[in-house]
Structures are given as structure tokens and as C-alpha cells.
Amino acid sequence: MQAISAIPATPYAPPSYPGTYSPGSQTSNRPPNGSGPQVTSNDGPVGFRQRTAGTPTMVGGGNARPSSAVAPIYNRPVYVPLGAPYSPLVPRGEDSVDRSDLLNYRVPNSKLSGFNLDPNGIYVPSHAGKGKTYFTKIDGNTYKVGGFDRSNRSWRVLDPKTDRPAFNLESEGGKWTPTSKIYPPGLKGRMLRALDGGINNVRQAKAQLSNRWTSTTSHAMRKLFNKSSFTQQDKARIAAGFDRTLKTMEKNRREGAWNLSVSNNLGPFGPSAVAYPNGNIQFSQHALRNWRNTDLNELSVHEHTHTGAGTTDHWYLNSNLGRQPNWGGNLSPFTFNNALNNADTMARATSYLAIN
Image (cartoon, rainbow, N blue to C red; front, side):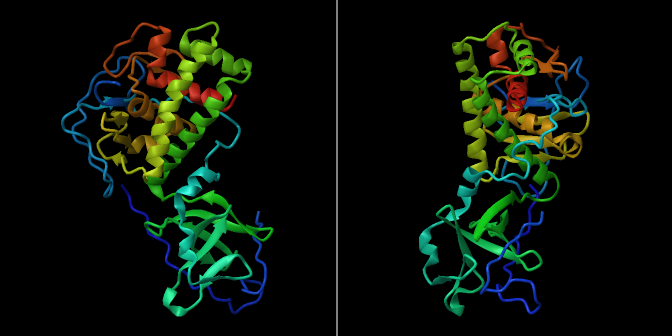
């Protein structure tokens, strides 16, 4: 996986020009089951055929590796995006702050020993031996910060394990507030954005599953699951699949998404992603470069239904929710049980419910 350089510690000293940071003043910044691996393919929607993926070449030094003992599940061809529903809203999770994610970067309060709180809410070293290390508190939790930007008087929450930037911080009303998440540049960044966007989709879908549906959502759900109406038991079975998928996605994020990687071998005519039974998922460079964020979010959910909820690919869906043969050219019977166990169905359901 591609690496991202850590932000070097920036000396936290009063700047020599007026109007910038001064330790004695308040700061403010208000600028604005499958039995084998599952694959999502890049080919045309009709006549999908089995391909030999081989051993993908990883971008950078990611830890995720395919298992030689199992075969992957291939997803749709890259040149046929999933067709997630368009939303005029900014997708939830795109640069927004998830406080539960922020908690993954907190450090023990004992780290503040030997530090003094300055007037701006930053804990600074009480003596030179502490070096250029700084902390702050957010919602009662302690975080390591760095990358002080004098131009807008902002900080970055740092990953305590790597010192890489995780969130942007701005001071509002005398409190440091996380304003956006920081992603690595390039393909790795898009892959991690899709993981976060997918997590948000599943969370929103779970919440909306028991709410009143709009006509658009209701039509989509009936067509997706081949049902004219849904009982509470039906919804509970859908929710159970969401729960298992979400649990796996959140675990992957907490652990740094080490099992997600970008493969050089998955081109425009190959699968858009490959999921392995050991939990590894590889994404096509072509998909990461060319697909919409909403499609990538759904692709991330699709793959995690394989690794988390044990789904298979009974069929693929086009943008009109029409069923298409899977990678092997097969089309399973359109039953509710098969739909519950179909990755595209569960993933597309999260996309519609998330914007209900």
C-alpha cells in the first residue's frame, strides 16, 4: 500500500509577525460465504466469465496478501460501475468527522505528565527534555497533536503509533474541534475514503431500515429483494447482514485497514475488486481512479459483505436494479433468501437506505 509521510513536528513558538499565534491569546479559525474469494468485475454487464486473477501485485508495502490456499471472489468488471443512486448531498463520511473514529487516536491521560496547559488549550512541555511534543483534550480524551500551521493557527491530531496526521483541528469558542479527516494522497486515500463512506452508508441504512421509507427507497427495496412488502422479520434478517458487514468494516478501520490493498493486475477489463476468505480485499487501480465516490463506497460495502456476512455473488445489478449474470455467467433464482445472500443486493440496499 502506498505510504504517507508523517507530518514533522512544528516548533510551537510565538510567530514573530502580528496577527498569528500568540501563547497568551485565544486562537480562532473560522475560515470558512462465499466458499472462495469474491470478485467484482470490470467487464460488460452481460456474459461475465471467469478469469484467472493470478497473484496481484501490491502498490507499496501493504501487509495484505492473498492466500494461496483459497480462490478469491471476483467482483464485476471495472468498466461497469455499480450504479449507486445519485445524491445531491455530500456523502456522509466524506471528510466529515466521526467522533467514534477519533477515539481510535486517543492516548492515556498519563502522557500529560510533565506538560503544562497554555491559554489556548495546548499542553506544552514543561522542560526542554520533552522535545517538540504537544497534546490537547477533546471531549475529555487526550490526543497527541502536531503540524501546527501558523497561517491559520490550526493543528493536526496525530496517530500515536506512526505520528501521521489523522484529523484537522480548529479552535472554535476556545475549544479545539476536529473539522475533517486527513487521508493519504492518491489511490490509498480513495480506498480509505471508500471504507469510511461505506461504514457511514451501513450505519445510516441500519437506522433507516425501521423508519418510514420514501417512495424511491420503497420501490428500490421491493425490486432489490423481490418482495411487495416487508415484515419485521424480513427487516431483521436484512439488519443482521448489515450488522455483520458493519462489524467487519469497523474492525478493519480500527486496525488501520492493513488488509485492504491496491492491485496492479486488476485493469479495466479485470475485476474491480477481489475478496479473499481470509479477509483480504484488493481494489482495482482503474476503479479507484475512475469511479464516483458513491460507487466506491458501495464497492467497499459489497466486498465487506463477502468477508463479514459471508455473501456470494448470485447476480450483479445494473444502475436500474436489473439483475445481470455473475462473474461466472450464472444467474441464481430470484428468491428473498438469495437476495439476502447476494453482495450487490445488500450493498445497493445500503446506498438507497442511507439517503432515505
